Image 1 (cartoon, rainbow, N blue to C red):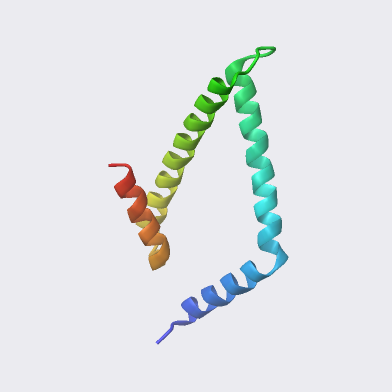
Image 2 (image 1 turned 45 degrees about the vertical axis):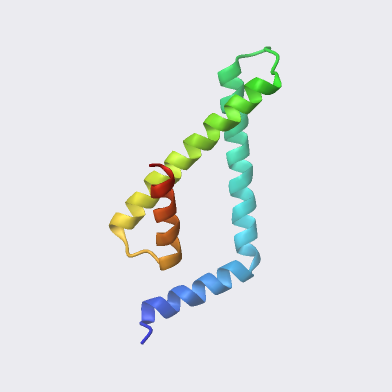
Length: 100
Protein backbone atom coordinates (compact mmCIF):
# COMPACT_ATOMS: atom_id res chain seq x y z
CA UNK A 1 0.00 0.00 0.00
CA UNK A 2 1.27 3.44 -0.92
CA UNK A 3 1.96 5.69 2.04
CA UNK A 4 0.76 9.25 2.31
CA UNK A 5 4.31 10.58 1.86
CA UNK A 6 4.82 8.55 -1.30
CA UNK A 7 1.54 9.70 -2.82
CA UNK A 8 2.32 13.34 -1.97
CA UNK A 9 5.77 12.94 -3.51
CA UNK A 10 4.33 11.45 -6.69
CA UNK A 11 1.69 14.17 -6.95
CA UNK A 12 4.30 16.89 -6.43
CA UNK A 13 6.67 15.42 -9.04
CA UNK A 14 3.87 15.04 -11.56
CA UNK A 15 2.65 18.61 -11.08
CA UNK A 16 6.18 20.01 -10.99
CA UNK A 17 7.37 18.34 -14.18
CA UNK A 18 4.19 19.16 -16.09
CA UNK A 19 4.13 22.81 -15.12
CA UNK A 20 6.33 25.67 -16.27
CA UNK A 21 8.03 25.79 -12.86
CA UNK A 22 10.41 23.00 -13.85
CA UNK A 23 11.36 24.74 -17.09
CA UNK A 24 11.83 28.09 -15.34
CA UNK A 25 14.05 26.66 -12.60
CA UNK A 26 16.03 24.60 -15.10
CA UNK A 27 16.61 27.64 -17.33
CA UNK A 28 17.73 29.81 -14.41
CA UNK A 29 20.08 27.08 -13.21
CA UNK A 30 21.56 26.64 -16.70
CA UNK A 31 22.16 30.37 -17.02
CA UNK A 32 23.82 30.56 -13.60
CA UNK A 33 26.08 27.59 -14.35
CA UNK A 34 27.00 29.06 -17.72
CA UNK A 35 27.99 32.38 -16.11
CA UNK A 36 30.13 30.57 -13.53
CA UNK A 37 31.82 28.46 -16.18
CA UNK A 38 32.63 31.51 -18.33
CA UNK A 39 34.09 33.32 -15.31
CA UNK A 40 36.17 30.28 -14.31
CA UNK A 41 37.43 29.87 -17.87
CA UNK A 42 38.45 33.54 -18.11
CA UNK A 43 40.30 33.34 -14.78
CA UNK A 44 42.04 30.14 -15.79
CA UNK A 45 43.36 31.35 -19.15
CA UNK A 46 44.12 34.86 -17.99
CA UNK A 47 43.16 38.22 -19.46
CA UNK A 48 43.89 38.96 -23.09
CA UNK A 49 45.22 35.52 -24.02
CA UNK A 50 44.19 33.80 -27.22
CA UNK A 51 42.29 30.58 -26.78
CA UNK A 52 42.93 27.69 -29.13
CA UNK A 53 40.79 24.58 -29.59
CA UNK A 54 43.11 22.43 -27.45
CA UNK A 55 42.77 24.82 -24.50
CA UNK A 56 38.98 24.82 -24.81
CA UNK A 57 38.87 21.03 -25.05
CA UNK A 58 41.12 20.64 -22.01
CA UNK A 59 38.95 23.03 -20.01
CA UNK A 60 35.76 21.18 -21.05
CA UNK A 61 37.27 17.85 -20.02
CA UNK A 62 38.36 19.22 -16.64
CA UNK A 63 34.95 20.79 -16.12
CA UNK A 64 33.20 17.52 -16.98
CA UNK A 65 35.35 15.63 -14.46
CA UNK A 66 34.69 18.30 -11.82
CA UNK A 67 30.91 18.06 -12.33
CA UNK A 68 30.98 14.26 -12.24
CA UNK A 69 32.88 14.32 -8.92
CA UNK A 70 30.47 16.86 -7.43
CA UNK A 71 27.47 14.87 -8.63
CA UNK A 72 28.88 11.73 -7.03
CA UNK A 73 29.56 13.55 -3.75
CA UNK A 74 26.03 14.95 -3.61
CA UNK A 75 24.48 11.60 -4.49
CA UNK A 76 26.50 9.87 -1.74
CA UNK A 77 25.32 12.41 0.84
CA UNK A 78 21.71 12.06 -0.30
CA UNK A 79 22.02 8.27 -0.22
CA UNK A 80 23.27 8.36 3.37
CA UNK A 81 20.58 10.75 4.60
CA UNK A 82 17.49 9.52 2.77
CA UNK A 83 15.92 6.54 1.17
CA UNK A 84 16.24 7.45 -2.48
CA UNK A 85 13.87 6.24 -5.21
CA UNK A 86 15.05 3.17 -7.10
CA UNK A 87 15.73 5.04 -10.36
CA UNK A 88 18.09 7.43 -8.59
CA UNK A 89 19.76 4.58 -6.70
CA UNK A 90 20.46 2.84 -10.00
CA UNK A 91 22.04 6.03 -11.36
CA UNK A 92 24.17 6.27 -8.22
CA UNK A 93 25.29 2.68 -8.69
CA UNK A 94 26.25 3.48 -12.29
CA UNK A 95 28.31 6.43 -11.09
CA UNK A 96 30.05 4.25 -8.52
CA UNK A 97 30.88 1.62 -11.13
CA UNK A 98 32.10 4.21 -13.64
CA UNK A 99 34.54 5.69 -11.13
CA UNK A 100 36.22 2.35 -10.48
